[in-house]
Length: 374
Ligand SMILES: Cc1ncc(COP(=O)(O)O)c(C=O)c1O
Image 1 (tube, rainbow, N blue to C red):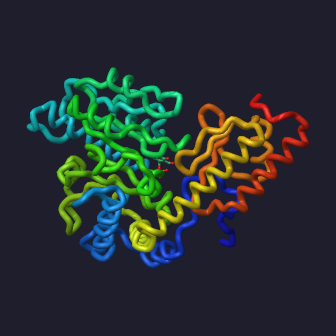
Image 2 (cartoon, protein in one colour):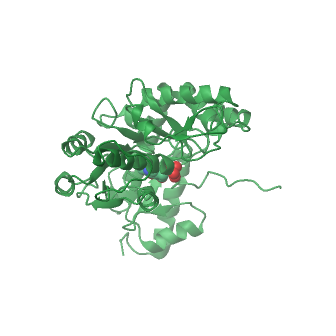
């Protein structure tokens, strides 16, 4: 096979990036290992313990437990599964195991800005997903969350770095609400987790009563795909996921997949060892400066721009301009409301953004219409 993967020079909407060279090298070295079978592959299994220790440092958690998942989707599904199992155990007084009858379907309360992976979780796990609105600045409306939770609520979700606008929900307040109904608080920091440590946001385990978290090395963490992260505050939460593994040397397994990528685990450890914290801080500063530069340029061209609180810019470009940019090979996407969305990942350079803006400028001049949103 002679084909090559796409270049990254026009990729502006992906939440993945080129892996750091040390992450790439480690991924290749551990390609044929399977942390799903720790009895046979003890080296990668030990590396996974290191990955969780490092993720705990990033997310402010002493004594972390968890595992390297295939991505944010799996981490979110597993977090919902933990909450569902815990709710069942609580509802039945801890006496039942397996799939007991439940008095009521457990619910997960989530802002409408939550990632679509929770729809999959609800679907697969048979829980009800209750979406609550966000405010004018795209953060969850706390009053709406308060009004939504009740004794059926198994989990409240807060997003730390939303997919569309890079917003951080008020995590400590969500924690209080979750505790008031004895629900778990899950933080989805799949994308934001490797930039938020360098901001003033309250998002992590030592800022709030967070129970579980998705935090992905294969996004801002610069590891190779697949390397997602599921962290839990208390190791016993993982017991909610454990199944017996009769034919393996290890006795139980908490992961969703069986055979897993050792490449993802090894590259996550390599990237975090190399970059935490200074390398990630420098990358955050570069990405954030790029986002602010792009936002200012687009505003100067007359577009409405959503202030980039994290390195993600949303702007209201005319549909025709958006389509012309896609035609020209720019890999861009739009929000649910139709704004252009640019994620300033590590591979996105200032030079790349300059040529992107120049192309928008040229398209606008060609169409001889003033920058307008219709
Ligand atoms: C906030 C958030 N959560 C979860 C996910 C899903 O992650 P993955 O695509 O790695 O499964 C994404 C993906 O972009 C995301 O932005």
